[in-house]
Each structure stands twice: as C-alpha cells, then as structure tokens.
Image (cartoon, rainbow, N blue to C red; front, side, top):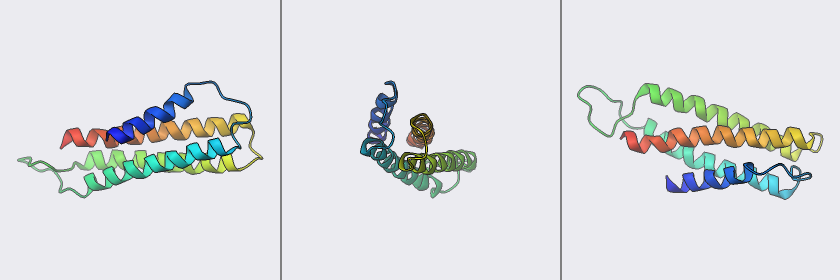
Length: 126
C-alpha cells in the first residue's frame, strides 16, 4: 500500500510542474505511462483480492467485502484503464499536439489516483 502511495506521489510531483515543450512524444512521457500502467496493475491486484473475499453479512465477520464497494472499484478501474489506454495512444502518436497529449497523460494519472485511493482504503475496511 505504501508502495502505491509513493508511486502516485512520484507521478503527481511531475504533474505539478508546468508542461515542458517537446516532452510528450519523447521516451520520458512514454515511460511515465509505462509506470502508470504498473501502478494500475498493483491497484487492480488489491481490488481483485478484495472482491474475492466473502460478502459481508450480519453479523459481520472480517475480512469481508461489500458489493457497493466492489461496484465503486469496478467503475474506477474502468475509467483508469480507459484513460491510460487513451493517453498511451496520445503520447505515441505524433499527430496529437503536445497540449492534447499532456492533458491525456494528466487525466490518466488523475484517474489512476482515484483508483489507487479506493484500493488503498480497502485495507482499512477489513
């Protein structure tokens, strides 16, 4: 869990700085998306492990999972996956301008942050 937090903090520290011209179609941006995919895989493993727990019923015996949380995880996972796919396409396609590609990367990282935040909170619920 700490690893995910540090990864997201690392990604966001790069997003806090102004965009650099020429950054989008170079190896650095593609590497950022590669690392974002790694964060996605880690968050997905946590979410999958949570979903595989038995469902919470009265009386609650921990660890267990709640369907409403699983639904929220699924939505966040789908948004993050779609945003990562779109940003990966944008940074690899020179037809997209730097502004469009930079926005796609920032959006993907934001979607990934939402997904990892939900996944990180799962440990506290158990």
